[in-house]
Image 1: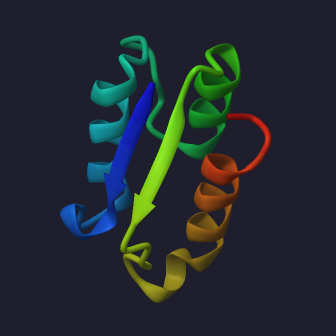
Image 2 (image 1 turned 180 degrees about the vertical axis):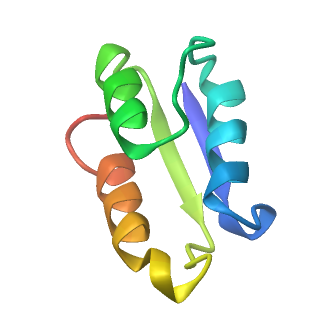
Amino acid sequence: MIIKINFDNFESREEFHQWLKQQCQFPEYYGCNLDAMYDCLTENSNFVFEIENPKLWNAEESFTYEITFELLKNGIL
């Protein structure tokens, strides 16, 4: 399944996680954090992500940003 992610559509990582949960049909218990994202993506490797307009939500989240993109683009998918 191909999922197009345009980061211009999100004002925060919380918005991104809620959107991702819906698009990927993650379970209700999805924790909307990087650990939960990793767990759900490794349970179902049928996703391919096309990323548009990657951006930081704020400078303090640069670490979260880097990990998010590593999870989306690397071998777990």
